Length: 388
Image 1 (cartoon, helix red, strand yellow):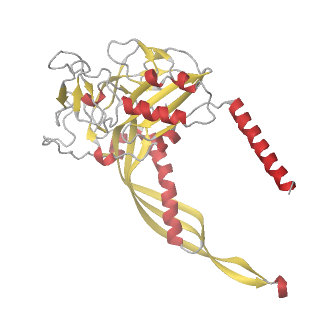
Image 2: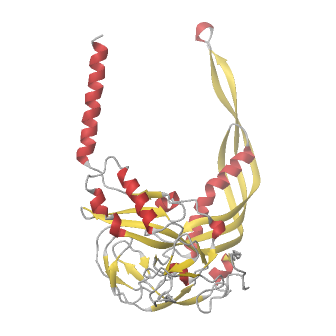
Image 3: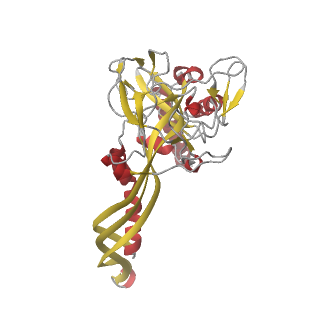
């Protein structure tokens, strides 16, 4: 992440989140209520009053995900939307609304600016952002997983992770600013379902053994007998998960998996109160291309299983993707972005499970001491062996 301009501008690309999140006043003191991770409540940070989030509550005009009034504590089904119809613009199943987007020019994160805030630090790279903007029409979010662990727990697991980095600089904890730098972020994702039918042509290899040599030099050598193979195999894919953001590396986001997608709830603005939300930078069709890449190893495995034998070689395959549906979802991440010697680093925490992965700088002198210590230990061992 290079440090370019500290200024961000609103751009006319399709973001995910609302331009201005709704605010929910406390019924007792009037202060802004915040979502309490691990609950279905909004909580006042001042008088500690709790307000349960109504099961059917949503943004104005959003409606419920199922179009019905769900009874309390019943998780409604999350609707899958038709991929081709959406791409072709032939459906209104995924409503659009006016949204604003702010883009960090340092790391290219697409972020919703909080109400009445004209400047902030980017939660992904800690670069200062100053925003101006315009409104664009975008797809609405459909569902999300609320934060399951609170900031205190996130700070604890982050401290534990940092403490376990043996070759990190000694002042890393101070530089990372765990107490002040942790941000709760909703990251946009796409999920895809589809049926695939793959026609393939390849070879099946069966091992056999032959005896070569004679007398004491006789050995068994493995050989492979190849024969042509071809066929057609089906696969069913459910909830293939693709990040809609490039602000956190895809590999790191994959490391935070698995997510409890069976617990998805219909999108409600209440869950975002007190958190930052990012807009998607990966479009719906580009996301499906990434989903296909995640499906390919599974398809290859099915083809190899169908070929059979001890080894397989796939010469050619063609896959047809049918019944493609998608969901727009938000997943909760606790994020610590910090700079060390003007280089940006990120540590991420799955805000449902506490799984943590991240980046850190290395201490050259600690690594050097470890190498020197290893060489000394090796020298001592060799000396003792030779002195016997």
